[in-house]
Amino acid sequence: MNTCSIHSRWWRFVLVLVAMPLAVSASDVRAWVLLRQNADASETILSTDSMEMRSLTKFGWQVSATGNLTTNGGAKKVLVTRMLSTSPVVSRRLVLDPEEVAANLKAGYVTEGAMGYASTVALPGAIVVRRFRKADREIWVSAPELQSWAEGSGWKSDGAAFWLFPER
Image (tube, rainbow, N blue to C red; front, side, top):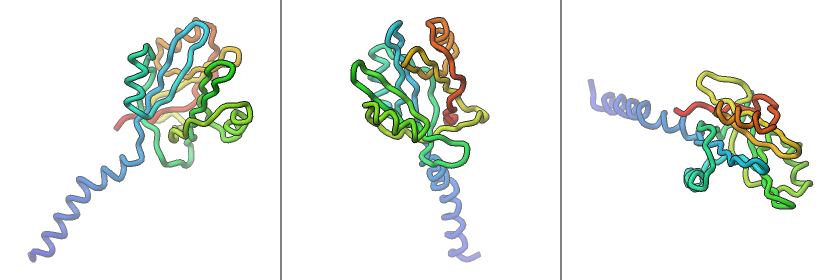
């Protein structure tokens, strides 16, 4: 066996062990669904920033779900957009439809960012996120105890909105 063949196999081995897992996970974005419980003004944030998540939990926000979004769109995926309005009160929304993004912009919301793509179907290990509504407000929760709290506080479930991909 010549040394060229050995080096070629060694580089293929390195590619399989190192480069391929990095390429696969490069499209994953860690995401947290956080809920601030308040009888009159509950709100939800979907965060992809660990510093933001830690800061919010220090101020009493609860992590309702932890999973992944992906930067790759495609079939059975939906782009989750985070939006904010500060008038007349602070209101946050997660928007899954481009037409709803446009309508919210016209209504005075600003886009805080496209967070990434979530699954529109249940997958093994995926984390369901449900939307709840009360009057003109909405919250998004996953944890069963927070779903029970929402229902007991008068929030009405729209059912499963999307699924976070499982952590890898």
